[in-house]
Structures are given as C-alpha cells and as structure tokens.
Length: 301
Image (cartoon, rainbow, N blue to C red; front, side):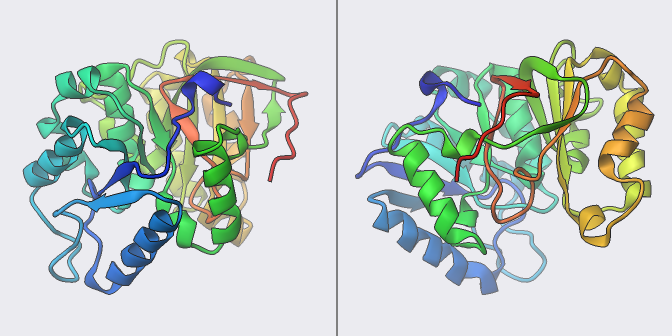
C-alpha cells in the first residue's frame, strides 16, 4: 500500500508520455491506442505519443532498441511530461537497458508505469537509480474492466486516494511481511539474472505473476530464482495471478510450487488475485516499502 507521499498526483492539463520499450504496437491495434488517448483526454490529460510506439508490420519489431530508449529518455528530460506510461508488452524490453541514462532518471525522476515484459525496465530503474516505478498497464482503462479501472485511476491519481494501490492479500504461509518491493512478471524479471540490472534480493519482498505457463514452466522459473539465491535472502514472497494455470485449474498451483521450491518454513508467502495480467489488475510500486499483514483486509472498489 502506498502512503500519500508516494502517490503520483495528476492534474487536468498535465502532459503524459506514452512509450513502448517492448514490442511495438501492431498496426491493427492503433485504434486501441487512439481510444486510450480519447479516454485520457476526457480526464483532462494531454497524451504525447512516442514516435517509436507503432510497428511497421506484424513482426512486433518497431524502432531499434537504441531509438526506443532515446524516446523514453526524451520524456524524462522534458519538463512538460508529468508521468510516463508504457503501453507495450512482449519480448523486447530488455533491449533498451544498455541505452538508458540513469543519471538523468535519478536527477529528473517522474512516475513511470508499465507491466509484463516492462518488468525488466521497472526493476532496472529502481536498481540503478533508487527511483520507484509502477507495475500497472494503462491500457486497462480501455479493457474488459474499463469502468472500474477508470474510477480507480481517477480517484487515486487525481484525488490522492488508495484504490489503485490496495490489492487484497491472503497468506498461505506466515502472517506478516515488510520490505522494499521488487519483481513483476516472473519470466521477464528473470531476464535480469546475471546482469548488473538485477536488484539485490537481501531483505526485499519479491512479487511474481505470470500470464502463460503451466506448472512445469513456472517450476523452472522458481528453481532459477532459488539457484540465484533469491529465496534465501528475501523477507517475503508475494504471488499475483498465474493466468494460464488458474484458467486451467492446474495442480500444483503457483503457491504450492513456491512453498515446495523455496523450502523455507519461515518465509512469509501471500497471494492475491488483484495483480497480474487481468483487466482488473491493481498497481504495485517497485522500489517502495510494502507491508502486508494477515489482518489487513481491504474492501476498496
């Protein structure tokens, strides 16, 4: 949960940047972005679209990684831009990491939102600058749960509420955890393994979710985290939605796999259905302290 000081506040007339650090938006999805811009304009915001947003064909490749990074950095250097929202996902986000100017991000911090493959960028920004980043996909404002997402977005980012930042957790092991949050999509987070962009796990709370993958694939990712030493160092493990497994009713589920592979009876583990790839997903803040208690039950919209 964010404190009031951590909640980015937007106002009517603010410019926000729309970028694509990962796969470019396919041509047939251009109307989706135009619809999103209409919604944002209806809230009084002024969306500024990156020239690297759209793919030229069905490959998903758009501008080269260096150009995508340059477009991203341009929004950080532009004082008119109040926040940056990545609308992409896929496979290509880690390509921009070598071209980011972390000194600029540190000197001119601003709220940066993204999810899925952009997990790699969110965690890198925190790791290299200490600046928090927001695990959230703004395209959900036009998705299956558009009405509730627009209400949460406005009440939180315009009115300073907590609705967007209040997922409901239940513990599967332990009753309490506290620490700085890292993580996101498990596959994309693991792209940072062996690089200088991976955060130090010591004393942190690790969040994991996944769109695709059955028990075997998710187990392989969890084993890699164990082999990286993550489960021996973290202060807590948070699990979001594991969409394919949950849709298929797969067994063992993600929580069972995590408990089995982490093999730490003293590790607090909690689960939520409120953060992940679903259209109703709420927001978590990478690089900020999170506190989760078994008695902390929320009933926000």
